Amino acid sequence: MKPQPQNWTHFADFKAVRSRRTEVLVVSRDTDFLFELGSILHGRFRVRTADSARVIAPPSAAARWLAIIDTASPADARADVAIMQEQHPLAPMIVVTHSPWQWSAALARGNIIAAIAREELRSARLMDALSAAERRLAGEHGLPAPARTPASLTRPGLPVLGLVLLDVALTLWWLLAAPDGNRVLRGALLGASAVATLLLPISLYHLRRAHELLAAAAAAQSQAANILSSMREGFFLIRRDLRLGASCSGALTELLRLAAPAGRRFEDVLKPLLDPQTLSAAVTFLRLLWQDEANEQAIASINPLSQVEVSFANAHGGSELRYLSFAFRRVHGTDPAGDCIVGVVDDVTDRVLLARELDRTTADSDSQAGLLLQQLRLDPIALQAFLDGADVAFRKSNALLTAPGIGQQQLQKKLHGVRRELQAVKAEAATLTLESFTARLQRIEDTLLTLCAKASLSGNDFLPVVVGLDELISHAATTRAIQAHIASLQAGAATPPAVRPVRDSAGTSSSVMSERS
Image (tube, rainbow, N blue to C red; front, side, top):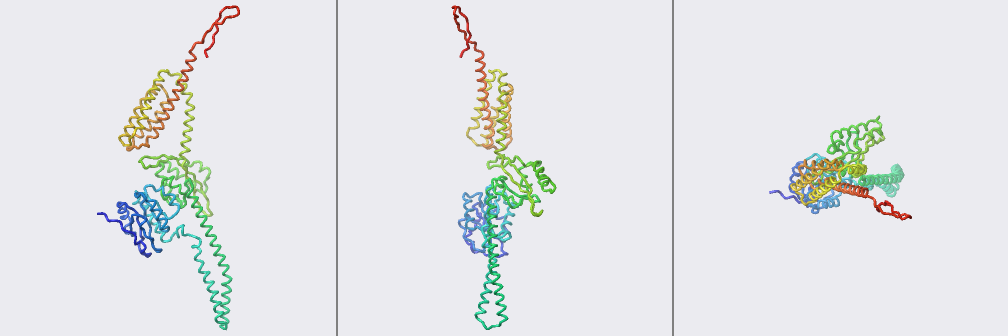
């Protein structure tokens, strides 16, 4: 029998003892997840569980704890995260999810330390996130962003002002209470009070100046965070050891489908996306960019990542093809230790596909003359028979693709049926030397061969086949229209002109040829 999750209602009774283990609150309804996480955290942390964030009592001010929230299984997991952020803004949180990149905007602000994939629970990323949460609890990085206000930062200067005022008050009390006391002591107190009175406006000025500077710094930091979170491009910094810096835009995790990229080696970030040859060229390029005597303009022209094709796994088990463009520029600081490489990555898939479509349209326009010449040298009857047979095959293929059914057996039936129909059309087109049809049919057949090699199919895998078939149908309609126009011209040229008799003034008859209108 599996143990039931413990209740967290007595959470307010925790005591912040330095030697005590850190409390970890796990919010989840998945018992298997709780057992797996409990075996990982056992010994280092004191684990408590709760079914929902709504049953958690407010903690005491001295409580030392962090939270791990399971967003992979509960339907209202995002509501639990929102409740935790509202009620416990200072508690570090780790989110476990199936799609870590969807939490990139939340990582840029607030108290969420990291978003970890459900499959990475036993990896080093979870321990790194827990260590970061403990450092925040211990105060190694100061207070969280919401708590670092100028008022709290200038509070240490207030005791100085209090001591000055206390000194003045004691001096006045001594003078009024003992007017006939020791003249030396009275003089010393009077001198000290004069010095304190002079220091008072200076202290007030410096306190006010510190308050203004801290407010300006906080505003600049908030503005920079807002800019990074609203950027559409992925912005990041690369240190001299080729690791990513702490500052990065929220869009970076979405573009690279990667959670918490800060601090990771840039080579490890790109390794799942690029082939080994391109990856090696990218690392060599960055090392050249770090050389002081390098010509940055010349090196930028050989950037191997200016446009790269990457593939991401989608939720249906297939792959999603995208095109990314990386740009790099070295930034020099006041000293060599402050130098860094600024990197920007953008998704240029739409631009690449549009350029390819434009090239294809231009090629199709150029091939119109070739298509016309092909039809002029072909037997019209044979061409008409080919177009009629192709039209039947295209309609059958379209019916197969649009038929209901998403099971593997049904998808395999669609695949082989469409391939069989189009192979017959391709063989006939090759016989008639119709290169325009042969090239288009070959592209579709290559796609079908790729699908035949896959172990599992989905409906989205057939989208390129549908697009190619639609293009074939349009091309066949254009060919039929050109053939009909040629036939009408040939029919008009073969019709003999009409002859009508005309009588001249002498009454004789002559023949005058007139073309039919």
